[in-house]
Image 1 (cartoon, rainbow, N blue to C red):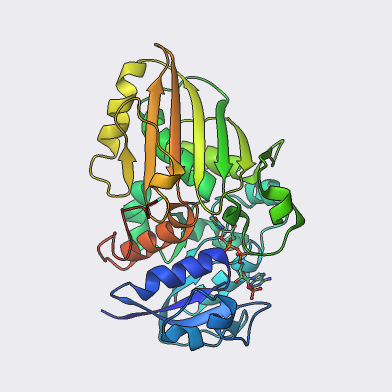
Image 2: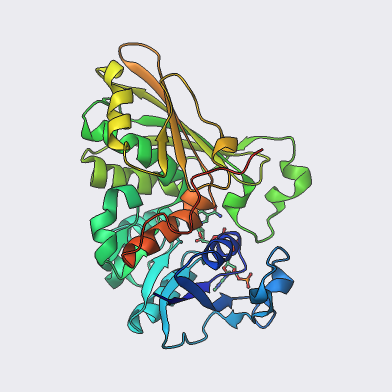
Length: 343
Ligand SMILES: NC(=O)c1ccc[n+]([C@@H]2O[C@H](COP(=O)([O-])OP(=O)(O)OC[C@H]3O[C@@H](n4cnc5c(N)ncnc54)[C@H](OP(=O)(O)O)[C@@H]3O)[C@@H](O)[C@H]2O)c1
């Protein structure tokens, strides 16, 4: 099977990671690379790490028409811009995996609260399937549009959902303290991300309410079947890629929590529950599509859960490819590594 693929936003960090993954995929074939300010250049000029024949491919402008033989479109664009490209691709009958936040909420009011802008295509929101692969396989398989989850929500929902389903967590708000490498903020120039400003430093941001808090609450309820409130404090750290989320939880039967998580993910190639008391690190997931989860039971009622992903893989392009494999009824792990790069 040969499936022609377009990557819109191919010059950004998640776009570059999609190129790297899809080039090695046995059935997906990149035929269209889209860009915005870099349109007209060759991708090899903009991404020096791209070395195959594809380096000579010219970047198409964002509004260029997609050829009829393209079946799958990845939109790795800023929110707002993504919705418009998604609409055009859907109208032409393509399947779409959108990496932006534009289709992650079911209601346009929630989107507007979180992103402070009106949704460009609210009529499409109910058309999208929220693509947390491990929990939405059947719907993803039937979807024309998959909204790829955010990186922080992926790292927090994966541990939370089995515990919520088991009615093991009892406190509100759930306290989530998270750290991200700077690639999480994308490739465009920002003063706060200059080397001098970020190196050897650590800072919180996004308070009082980071955009991803709405997404965590909506899908904790969607998949965990319990309404929760999160107190989410993200931090940016001087590291290129990687994300670590620490969840401070209280509840009941804490001696069963490790088993609940182990059972939920026993057959999942991309979610690993570490032995009780072992805690994950960003190094052990870097370059892989894995989420590693560790927990430490502090008492009969208190547990700390730590969850790590590579923000550009399980947090973005890796999960996007996992979802695309599901949409085309391919083996879900095709083109994805369970192994981290080491060291
Ligand atoms: N970075 C992460 O870890 C991560 C994780 C999960 C989800 N996401 C989401 O994925 C999306 C892409 O993120 P990223 O980090 O790859 O961003 P990025 O590095 O900033 O890249 C943005 C891409 O979009 C293009 N672009 C910028 N403005 C545009 C516009 N108005 N219209 C059309 N194209 C435009 C850029 O093209 P030019 O270079 O040609 O200007 C570039 O290819 C975002 O919605 C982000 O929130 C990112």
